[in-house]
Length: 275
Image (tube, rainbow, N blue to C red; front, side, top):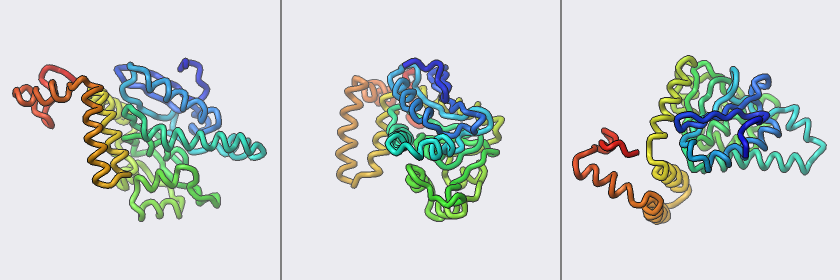
């Protein structure tokens, strides 16, 4: 698909990094039906684009994503039950499953407001960095609701029970520093430093072997759901798959480089510059 002329998402690719900007700044990038339909198409296109080695998701203006667009989603579809169901399922699918199991590394760059459904975008990404000035909230309780759709699962995946229930039952907002303290994001920094720090991280990851990155993500995600024996069997099978995808490069180039003294894993890249 063409990634030009999208109504709710702007896409730019540079130096192996695809930046997806949720682009409804007047609505604090709230998720509306159009965005729900555009994002899966964008993710599908970038999945097969070799120029995009890492995805960074952020928001236009002063917000990351303020959650669901109440007017267009809840009010606009209330008399269209079949369409409401279709859009709701599509919304949960790309935030809750597609992002989580995306074959390429994903980083949320949280530049501002991140509420409700926006937290599921953040949680679906592998990593997240936030501006200290950003405002977060699990605010559904404030309008007599609970964190529905993928939001409760997203919160449960990342937060300790005490933190999750405190913010879900009070609806209190909190800033980027607190988001980092409770583990919602990896780190927080002044907004002026957020873009440069995120892009440096993305470039570091983009330099790694893409097949090894995919195997790293899949081994982690699926091992969470497995017992010991199943996880070991999966890991061994994944090693054979990685060897086939790389033509055994991890062994012939990676391990051999260490044995020959050309590199020290954990301390330096391969001396010959291989990813």
